[in-house]
Length: 188
Ligand SMILES: Nc1nc2c([nH]c(=O)n2[C@@H]2O[C@H](COP(=O)(O)OP(=O)(O)OP(=O)(O)O)[C@@H](O)[C@H]2O)c(=O)[nH]1
Ligand SMILES: [Mg+2]
Image 1: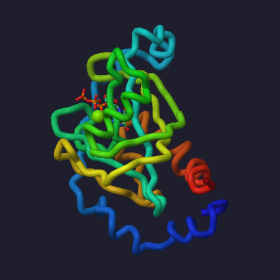
Image 2: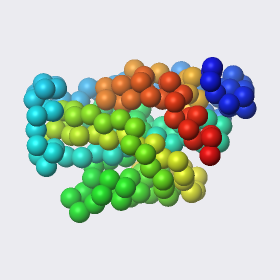
Image 3: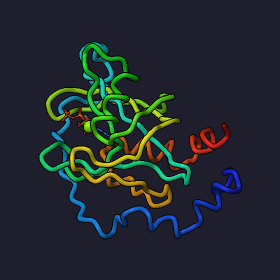
């Protein structure tokens, strides 16, 4: 917790807050792998930008420094793994428009004020994706699983990155667990 504002550091060391999040230990967890990679990272990275489907995902922190997480449904790639809400950008949309739509469709909140944190080319189950993770600084409403999926706030020190798809694991390890963006949010 070094480097965090004092109040935020207190939040992260206050175990009582974790009671509001569903304990991951109580949940069944069974990652079903996505399709086997069919392009190497080098091949993915060489694809022209208009030949990859864009995916946008949003990372949101609440006032307690907890991050919003959802569980992927059965029957989709990475079924039952955890994810940051988001989805595929439609052809007529900007990334920002897609983020607003996906958050309304999936977790019932209105989001605003985005900053790109990390992006990566990945093999999707049917086509290559370029996945973009945005930090979302403002939101309105109370999130819930609009599609019946589990949605919950998770303390940063309770995140087990192994429960997320591979691209998201890199984001968590390099950006979220470093607390870099938490400090930015709480400074304004
Ligand atoms: N939402 C989300 N998708 C992720 C994450 N990490 C990651 O690799 N993906 C991948 O991004 C791809 C598209 O995301 P999605 O399944 O949410 O797309 P979507 O909401 O448009 O789904 P739909 O096509 O069923 O409407 C999936 O193949 C998924 O595995 C993540 O943290 N959140
Ligand atoms: Mg989605």
